[in-house]
Every structure is written in structure tokens, then in C-alpha cells.
Amino acid sequence: MFISRWSKLNPLPLGFFKEGEGDGGAGGGAGGGGGGAETWHSKLPDDLKADPSLVDFKDEKEMIPMPINVARSYVNTKKLVGRDKIPMPKTPEEWDETYKRLGRPEAPTHYNVAVEGIEDPKLKEMLGNQLEWFKSAAHSVGLNDAQAQKLFKAYTEKSGETLKNIKQTGENSLREAEVELRTRYGNAFEGKMVLMNRGIEELDSRIGGGLKDLIKGVELSRHPAFIKAMVMVGEMMAPDMGLDKDTGGPAISAESLDEQIRTIQASPAYLKATDPGHQVAVDKVARLMQI
Image (cartoon, rainbow, N blue to C red; front, side, top):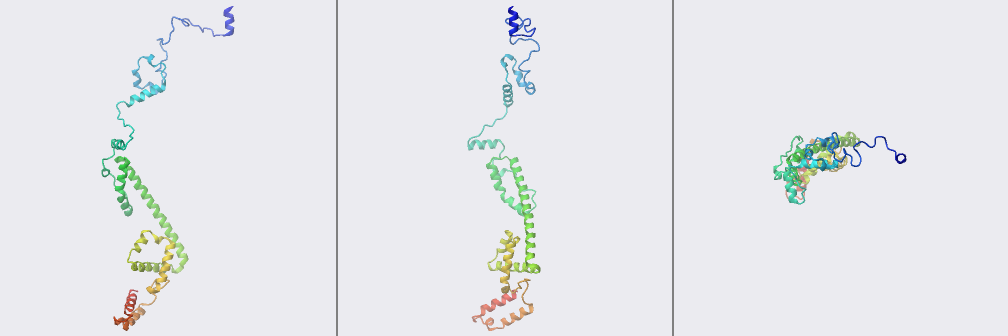
């Protein structure tokens, strides 16, 4: 009667109570050595099962239960044994020591960095001038020689690309400027360019030089606004230079120039040094001869 009532309240599958199991059963007990039983090692992932460092644990009772993260931590710790270790530096002195251990040269001059593969002479000169600065900067941030070489090579290549783009942009700007100016001056374009250059030559001479180099250095001659301004200057100076405002050539013939020179040279003002107009006459003859 008791068994019948219990089975109705808590039905169990047939065979639940096996022989030898239960309280004080002869064949049971935790950690029994029955064949084929699972162990902590058999439950590990494949990469940990194959790791030889875990073989050190012979007694399974020490490792029950064995968390996988504990096993992995132990394996990783074993891998560090015998390796060189660099502590995290905190002071400038410790950083210097760390950089040294990582291969930084003793001095910036010991870097094997050079300007190579550059065809443009101006870019090559610029990079050469920056080489010592680069070595000092590389040394201050702790780069080793290989890192410094790779970084300078990348900087060199980038500089070359930048210069190429600048040149291409400048050529495009120059073509656009020429189209605009040819539209403005029409058939007189060539003459206006001659007049502009003659005007710049004259200004450069009057200020003692340097103007032409400045214009070339900053590439002002590529800008339409500057060219138009210089053309206007040339036009204003044209009479004084004896030039035609449209062609940039002489405003009068060579025969007429010779006649004017002879006339002035025969005048009393030119011949007498004491004459009040002597210097003016001499300067005018010089100007006519220059033209």
C-alpha cells in the first residue's frame, strides 16, 4: 500500500535504483576509478588538451572542478617562463632604457637613413636639408634603425607624390591663365608678354636686383591677376623705355634713335659739363642707346 501511494506521488522510471547504488552502495562513491569515466582533462578544449604543460597535474583530485579559464591562464603563464620581460616604464630614464633595449641607436647620427630614389633636384635638396632633423626626431621618440628607415622612406614617397600633384596643379593653372589672357588681349597677347617681361627687367634693375628671383620663387607668373598687373606696369613704363605698348618692341626705328642720339650729343648741354642740363642730356643719350 505504501509503495503504491508513493509511486503515484513521485513516479520513477523502472530501473532507477540500480544494484550497488544508493546510500552506502557497494559499488559507488565519488571519485571512483571505474574505467571510461570523464576526467577534468577530457572536458578541456582540444587546444588545451594538447598542451604539455598541463601534464604536470597528475592527481585529478587537485583539479576538480577544473575551470577552463584557469587552465588557459596557467598555460599562458608557463609560456612566459624564460622570456625577456620589459616592465612598463614610468620615468624618462626608464623610457630611455626601454628604447635602448628595443634597438634605438646610441645617437641620432647612427641611423642609416639617406635620401634615395628622388629624381627632382629641388625635392632631393629639401629632403637632404631635413635629414638631420628627422634623425633627431626619430631618436627622441625611440625608433630603432629599421623603423626610422621605413618611416623616412614613406615620408620621401609622400613628398614626391605631393610635389607631383603641385606641379600638375600649376600646369593646369598656367594653361587656364593663358586662355584667360589670350581672350583679354587677343592678337596683342605675345606683345603684351614681351612688354611685361621688359617692365619686370626694368624694375629689377632699378631696385638693384632680386625681383625676378622673387617672382620665380613664388611662381607669381602663373597667376593671371599678377600678369595683368605687370602688363599695366609695362604699359605705363613703355614711353620711358621707348617701347610700343602693344608689341613690346621699340616705339621708334633704329634710324630715328641714332638721329636723336646725334642731336643730343651735339647740343651744348651734352658737351659742356658745367651746363645745368648736362646730366639730363647724358642720361637721355644713355637711355636711347639702351633702347
